[in-house]
Image (cartoon, rainbow over all chains, first blue to last red; front, side):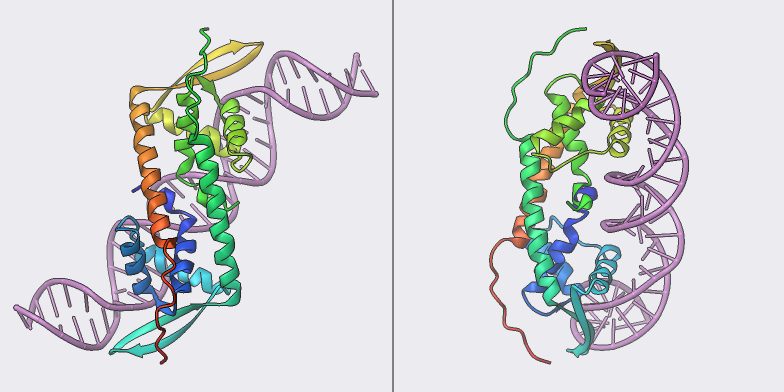
Amino acid sequence: MDSRLLSGAVEMLMLEVISHGRTYGYEISQTVDSRSNGYFSLKEGSLYPALHRLETQKLVKSSWHEVEGRRRKYYELTSAGIKALDAKKQEWQAFASGIQGVLGEGHSATAIPAF
Amino acid sequence: MDSRLLSGAVEMLMLEVISHGRTYGYEISQTVDSRSNGYFSLKEGSLYPALHRLETQKLVKSSWHEVEGRRRKYYELTSAGIKALDAKKQEWQAFASGIQGVLGEGHSATAIPAF
DNA sequence: GCATAAAGCATAGAAAGACTAGGTATGCAT
DNA sequence: ATGCATACCTAGTCTTTCTATGCTTTATGC
């Protein structure tokens, strides 16, 4: 896939996954990967900086926990994060509609004048 | 809108518009703007570099023409450009499906274990 | 006449974010 | 012992968008 398409959708997807319940970085990447049928594979270099960004923006909050002998940093949405997710989903719908508007109707070959 | 969502879609949209018939930069931006109901407004700093990129990649070819006293650089798709547009459209479909796959089904609250 | 807007092209520089590639550490299976 | 999966992190590179600016010509308003 063209990684450039991904830009901007990453945060929405991450927030979405986190909204389903407390989770952590590694699991988020697995979830996104499997739920998109392998289409998205968030790389660590995108994933962790994005998580830190979301935390800086107070859209998520984190806490360290030791589970099954593994040290994990769990994330959950703040109330601001819930609102942001809603906003981002709407934005996505508008974005997709905008694309469809341009791709949309055949607009069959308008007469092309010669020079 | 979040300009980061735009990434990667720009070239597809431009190729799409050009595929409808020979056109030029200024008109492309107007067309994209109106056909997306104002959602996308390609700025010149994105538009012209992108056109140059497409030309370097041989997806479009250009020629200068003087029309109605205006000096315009007209673009049209090459055969590689036609193929590229098809590919990008499919990629877009896959991308959108991937997003839907993640946003998609409610996945209602999986039990959240306490620590 | 003159100013302003619109049409039209272009680029330099700043800002942002994804990825590569590297690092650290634990648990488990071979 | 060795490798693989889990789990986190970040510096640096690359790409791309946008702001801001500059140039020219034509149309329009005063």
